[in-house]
Length: 143
Image (spheres, rainbow, N blue to C red):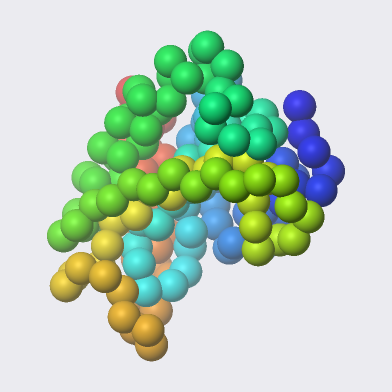
């Protein structure tokens, strides 16, 4: 089920907007890696279904979230070799603006050397982003 006003429900539009590449999906979840910027391995783990809040996960989605997060985080950790790894969950109320979200999304981040990315940090070579995204996709396909 999708909501047309939700950018993340329009997956191709979201991929283009964020400059990301989808590298894995199963029946309930999909992982997309952002292909530019100062952080290699910045990724979004999203449910296929439109959800206004994390409390709207159904039984199967709730049960599969942990394994999906662990599996994708492991692939990102291996591919990006981060010095720091964090996961955040964002869920806000329904809004129509692109800058706010209609459903929860999980951002899996592998931080650059030195911890947090500083304002003005230079972008990483796009070839490195491509290499990491391909390695994540290959690792998840092999399982």
